[in-house]
Image (cartoon, one colour):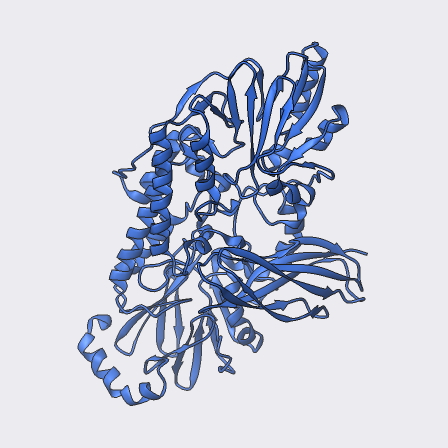
Length: 632
């Protein structure tokens, strides 16, 4: 086989050593790297050009075809100009609509982003592209006497393909974002997905496309390529070693994740299946021993996924309200004479199943709504965020209590805590009854089997003093008799010291594993899609109006970075400034305000704004987005 003719390949490359000295982007006589924000590839033959990914260098004027491996806009942007100059766009069949129906997607997403449990990244094209051909695994592309083989390689995206080419005595594989460098991956949040056969929805599917990604890596390895050219990062000249290294790293991360996942309490059989999909028939997951459970005290009433503290006086204090059924049950308690009033409502976190019926409740039972600082802004402005499970309901005037605030209510001592567990925007409430019993209402942050971090888009940060490390630190300060309340779990529960240490040690080990898996200088970039974002994510504007947005950057690194930002808006929109720079200190967030002028001629539409972000060695095009809904 041609790709095994290594001596011939070396001889050919030696012949071209002089040319290579002048052009170090040439991989072989016919294949040239087009350097830039991504790895464009030009295949040149008979004075014709075929391009893979696109041309980030801007040096190719004409091409016969552009081969796209997937529909991520942060890669596909590089091929758009060539397609507009009549190159034929070849795209995966499974992702064709992302190219051809971009406008329809964004018009739907204006509303579909609320109550979103699918949890797919929205780094998809903003504008439609004309497609010349769609391809799937098993297809071939004939061009200038060369044959390119198409391989289905889902994983980083649902419907990705790779292209295999034998030329110049070598076998190339163009694999998109399937791998980065020597056994790394750009991020994990892009792998979030459902597993219907195991009854795991997208929200609960922590990196579940890891299984097809590993299968795709093995399929590439079976083709025995000599050179991998990913969409980003270094060209890979030892594919077998890099692929084996990536598979091992992925499996190590997943085994670590499963061992302390709260999801196993809900879906035990499904989690055994999840383990086998990624780790094989003998997954050897070191599952944590579940916490101790018991029945809740009689002064706590379980009402759906809300809890009602019921005072001897007949007054009540409610934790969360996400459904009409909860209100109906509270009305029954009132009608039966057990409940006289609601004197307070505490919100543990912003998710719609905990907040969507707060306003409806207040119409029947007027009471103050209490939130901590972590939850305050998203409670007031849910539409300003791009996060899972958003409600459309605004809590207009919550009472914001500081972290650690203590308050006496009836026979209870209440302590309000910021508690960034299941999501960054999360709180907890410690209720200490005069009878000596103590409960910490942790929202959805724990179950007896561990931590509730199965949705990567919830922003579960892993810095010391943040995220679940902060939550565990708080649990360590509680008296041993204090029980935890997850409102989806009927019994109350607690962890002993060894279990708390096990979870903390597992998270510390995970940070090390993720640092090996990702190419970033800090692991949190690979699990936090919102480290850079445009705020507000969604807003409305009239034709001729100027609106403001903030570009917010969280520098996860342990050193300062300067971030260069370029804003992109639809034709006719004006941005001021169009480009900006900001320096952000380590582990800090900083923002810059930008203005966007909507043209007076704009018609009703969903307009998408994107931002390029460059820092350190990264040049990330169209990396984040926001929506401006133009209304008359």
